[in-house]
Length: 330
Ligand code: NAP
Image (cartoon, rainbow, N blue to C red):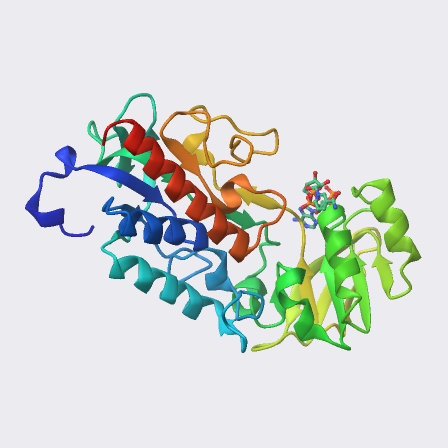
C-alpha cells in the first residue's frame, strides 16, 4: 500500500475529488481537475491477469493510429504513460491500489482499498469521478494472453488497418461481431465469422448485410480451442461442436467480439445502471443518479468505446465536478 499522504491520518483524508480508474477517461479527468487546483486523488488499480500495469484497455493494445496528435501512431502503453505523466505534472496524487468498496449514501463519499469490511473508508471525496471502464469478454484460452495486441484484437476500428490483404476471423455471433467483420472486409482479403451456434444473435438487418458481403463467410457450430503462434497469429484451431472435428485454419488475425462487460460491480445498488449494466449518465453530461458522482469513459458508454471519446468524457466529468463543487461552496 502507498505511503500516507503528507503523514495525514487516512481516515480523515477528505479530498475534493477522488477519481477511480486510470484509462484515458480517468487520467483526463485528473489533468483537468488538477489544473483546476482540486488536488485530485486517482486510484489507478493494480496489475491484473491481462496487464502488468493499470491504465485500461490501451495497455493491451500495440499501435494506436487514430488518437489525434500522433501522426505516426503511438504504442498504447506509451500513450497511457504520457497521460499519467501529464496528470502527475499538475499534482495528481496517484495510488496504485484497487478500490474494493464505495459508499455513496452520504457525503463525503467513502472509498475503500484493501479490506472492504474495514469500518472506515481509506479515502473520502466530496465528489467522485467513476472511470472504471469496461472489459472485453475473452475466450479464456492461454494464447490470448500471449497474442493480444500481436494479431489478436478486440477492436476492429483500432486494428483493422493492420490486416490488409490477410485472411482473418472474427469470433462471435452478435451485432458487434458482424459489425466488426463487415468493417474488417474493407482491409482483409477474407473474413470468417466463427460462431458457436447455427443461428446468429445479431439483428436481422445486420445479418442481411453480412450475408450479402462477398468477402464474409461463416463457420457455424464452431469454437476456437487455441491460437497458433508465439509472437504473431499463424493459425486458429477450430472445433466443430457437432462432429468434434478439429482443424487448424490458416488465419493470421483473430478478432474476439463476444461482448463487453462494464466494470460496475462496485456501484451496483448505489448508482442507476442500464439493463446491460452500463452506468446511466444524464443526457449530455457526466452526472449519475447520485449528486456529486460523475461518470466518464467506457463504464457509461456502450456505443462509441474509443480512447478519444473516453478522454473527451473525462474532461466533461472534470468540468461537471468542478462546477458542482463550486456551487456547493467548496
Ligand atoms: P452480444 O449481443 O451479447 O453477443 C455476443 C455473441 O458472442 C453471441 O453471439 C454469443 O453467442 C457469443 N459468445 C458469448 N460468449 C462466447 C464465448 N465464450 N465463446 C464464443 N462465443 C461467445 O454482444 P455484442 O454483439 O457485443 O452486442 C452487445 C449489445 O450491443 C447488443 O444489444 C447489440 O445489439 C448492441 N450492438 C448493436 C450494434 C448495432 O446496432 N450496430 C452494434 C454492436 C452492438 P450466443 O449467441 O450463442 O450466445
